[in-house]
Length: 315
Image (tube, rainbow, N blue to C red; front, side, top):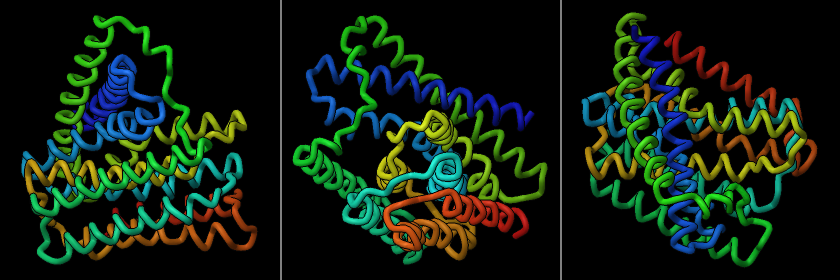
């Protein structure tokens, strides 16, 4: 039953996330917000909703390892799994915006999370306020940069959603909210049961299975685009997802329910892997061929992720 709950939870989270994005964009367009602002704020928050619901549900039920493991594991999977596989299918071009803005901000948030967790082994409400305030500042800077550089403006906002009826918009919102709520319930319950059945910790399940599950939408979109030879897949999109996972997901979760570090491996292994696999992107971006993430570099990222997952279960 635990496997069934996990699969059902994943399906509901994907469906719920899709409907929530649709309804959020439709409402924003009706409020006459610009597509740029919607893409950088509304879509980003909506696509982080599955991780947020899972982390919040886990924290409220006392499974803080799942809250942290979900975010940390998703960040590792976004780079090692999603970016690695995408680069192996079709080499990616790295723009200068990556190392001038996106990568330093991601490292700052990652190191900030490590500092918060390592000092008192808890992510407090005050630290949640700091993270949420930091993501707001990040968004302001992001919007300003996008206004100065039109090529940075996102194109994932469908303008046709503006003509969606009010009934459809509300229906999408209700379906999305309900699917996310029940999906997080099933996923957390199934993960806890599976961990008990396999004799492993909730942390191991969360940094592997749950993390991959919540990264499936990004993986599917990236692989399809790569197979079509579309260059719209941006490294900045995955970096932005990692930033939102830390700041908005854990920040909002900590505001509602402080997140406690229950497993020592979160600090001694998982978060170090998250920081390490993020850091290695810069040397990969410059060596040996500059501004390119080719197939062998993608293989290195994927191999690193495979080692991480293996060590998580072995440990």
